[in-house]
Length: 136
Image 1 (tube, rainbow, N blue to C red):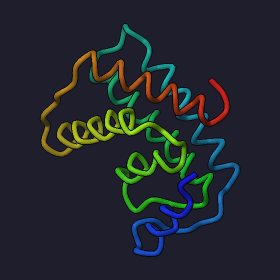
Image 2: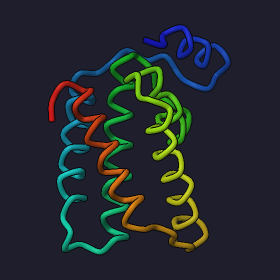
Image 3: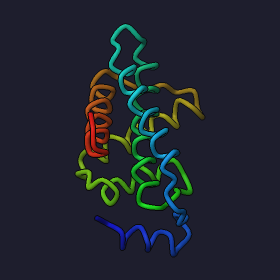
């Protein structure tokens, strides 16, 4: 599943080859699933749910990358590589890439631009990542 592409990214310095660490991967999956559960809590503000869903997806995507023996050079790369690490359809990958763009707007420019549809889509995609990592 995409190992050649990941190797190419490592060769040009975009990813770093690093042996998987089982404890790290288990911790990332646990963290991602906990945040995903919290992101589903409709009593929280939309911005909080966005942050939780984004960080859940990131932790799960990073667990997948670490499981393949790579470490990213940036947060964005874990989402870009999902097509290779978890065989995620490009349409779902695009949701996380858009979420990353909006996260950066909020984080670095103070411009919060989230809506219920995006948060729901992020929760759906993060849930799919969790399933693809062998468990709901």
